[in-house]
Each structure stands twice: as structure tokens, then as C-alpha cells.
Image 1 (tube, rainbow, N blue to C red):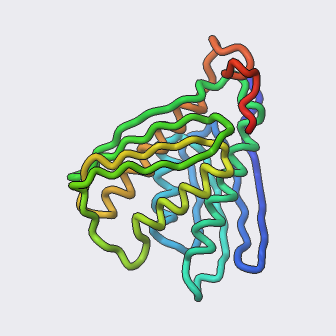
Image 2 (cartoon, rainbow, N blue to C red):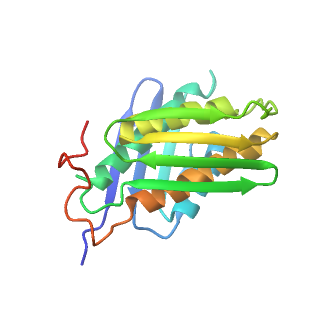
Length: 201
């Protein structure tokens, strides 16, 4: 029986107190509370569509704004995924998915390479509506923190969209499906999927 790929991480600072459990080979079951309702919605979608079991409990200085909580949840989520993956032996490593949501179309491509970076390509014709509660910029800052600490190279292409809610949700769902593909075990892969023999930075 394969070893269960699961990790539990905590991080406490003067600004936030975060507790996350991430099971890669799950059923899409989640229990999310960050104090930021739209982020809760996005993480629930990440869990559901990636078939990850995810528990997130976060307290932060939301009376100031949600920047610290948003970024720190991304940091700890990335750390927890990296820990659950271990040395990454046997994984497919790469993932790509395209998700439409009404007028929005978003594609994500990722490589669990150990060399983290976040790249956004937004078509010039895309004009996003503003959101006072949780913006597309907030979502990108979350993902930047996540991939930096998960060791993932993530490229996001916003092909079309007008409603920031639709674009952001399509982005998280595309990430979920790409991440599911990349973390899947492939019995044809022997050891770590790299010619270098490691996927560490």
C-alpha cells in the first residue's frame, strides 16, 4: 500500500496564526476558515476540483486589512504541499488545464520543479471589474506566496474575461486541475522525474 501523502503545518506570527492540513490523495473534502469569505470559497474550490482534502484555520489582523492573512495562508499552504510531496519521486511533475466560466477563460500550466516563480499573461482585451472585498490582484498575491513556498513554477494565462469573480474562480479551478495532474503518481516514473535526480532548488 502506497504511503499516504499528507502534511500538517502551523505558523504563528504577530500578524497571523495559521494551521493547515493537506492530503494530496483525497476526496475533495474541505474545512476552510480564513476570515476572508471569498478566499474560503476559492480554497474550497481548490480542494473540490483537485480532489485534495484540505483543512485551513487562520486568524489574522483583519481589522487592518486582509493582506497579511491572504499572503500568510498562501505561504503555509505552499509549505504544507511541499512537505506532503516529500522528494517528489514518482509524480508526473507537469500539469496543464483550461477552465471556462461564463465569459472568462483561464489556462494554467505548472511545473513542480523546485524553482518557484509566478507568471501572469493577461490578454489586452481583458478588462476586469473592480472588487472591494477580494480582488484579482489579491488572488495573484496569494498564488505568488503559494508557489514560492511549494516550489512550483506557475504560468497563468487569462484569455478572456470581464467579471473579476469569474476570472479568479476560473483561475483557482484551473490550478486545482493542473495541480491534481502534476501530483499524480505514475508507475512508469522511476524515482524523481528530473535528469538531475532532484527537484530541489
